[in-house]
Image (cartoon, rainbow, N blue to C red; front, side):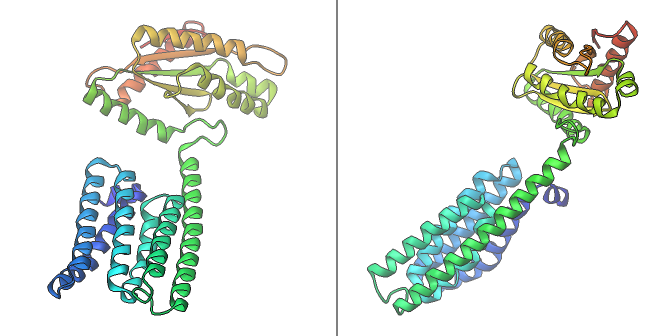
Length: 329
């Protein structure tokens, strides 16, 4: 449980908001019901019920976007009903909801929802003067403070989101080539095996290695070698399907993971890549580079380590047979 919360920020935030809503709104809602305020009591308990169901759904499916949006919408509607029913006493509940909503949906969605809610409350206050706010001064003060709070919450949430996305890129991407890194490859292989067991989807693996790359570094320098690796990744991505992925395995070795592919098609595509690399990748003196490729189709009840090892052995055979070849493992 703790591992999932640490690895999934949105699930953690969704769970935290749901826990706080259940802890603080449940007794308040029951109190309102017992004191005869049916609208506010029912609204509070509905928010508690919806939050609990959404958190439970997110835990079972690992889907946080839908539940987060539903919770945010219910909170906005509930806050409006509470403010209209309780008047000034209910206005104070809007401020914690401002914070909650930015944890549930994207910053721009949260800002739009809050501004719409604020507009509805202001309209209701103007239509029925004296019901929600005692004076125009109170209405203006509430509007300004809510707007400022929402704006600063948006700025903080947006910055946090961009920093989190940047960290994710750093954690999952090879800094030199822009391909996905080894850590991401391991996770993708595990996911592929899980999907294969559930749905029978066939997955293919290519492990490719640039031939004589050490000589490139020795004769042309490591900067040229780095440029070659950087140029290789776009070439690979252009020749595979959009949903297929390219990973840097280490050094001059790269892995291409392909979903829903047959053995014959895997071999055909690998040979296309071999020819494409030779055609489009060259050194400063126009000397063409070649690549050796080992391929392996995922077998039933096979571990990802064994699958990757078969592709590695096939690559070794391709090297041993003279390089610039495709060998199936």
